Amino acid sequence: MRLLLLSDTHVPKRARHLPEEVLQRIQQVDVVLHAGDWVDTDTLDLLHALAPRLIAVHGNNDGPDLQARLPEVARAQLGGLRFGVVHETGPAEGRERRCAARFPDLDVLVFGHSHIPWDSTASGGLRLLNPGSPTDRRRQPYCTYMTAVAADGQMTEVRLHQLQPRR
Image (cartoon, rainbow, N blue to C red; front, top):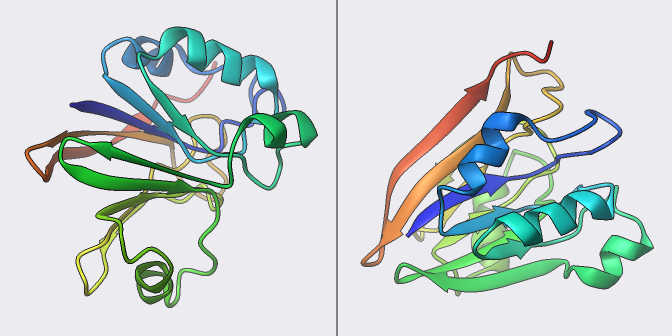
């Protein structure tokens, strides 16, 4: 099962639209996981139209329209793994311990908020992934997103993609 991980798209505040590379990638995967901060419902509608399956949550910058349509936490079984998606996990220090305690029933947690890519594993085995942002690099050198494969209870081919600067 091919996965695309996104977060913090912030359209149209940080960019007028999603990068073309991301739009093309959506059509090459089986599932898109989005960890919140959409900002507009048009981007949610677009991903619903393009993605074979969308698992998504709202973030702290998402207004009542998005909050009404999206949960704070989403869960799904994908490729034999138990996934969770949430927007915010708190400070980097202690993140693995906090998330393992909050989500003891998950194998993988996709999160966002910081715009800083993250890939770590808690002592109990919970994998934490933050794809960064495809539209707002904040203090990072590049805008980013992730892809991965989930199959037979394993995560493979986890890759952080760096996007070219917008022109």
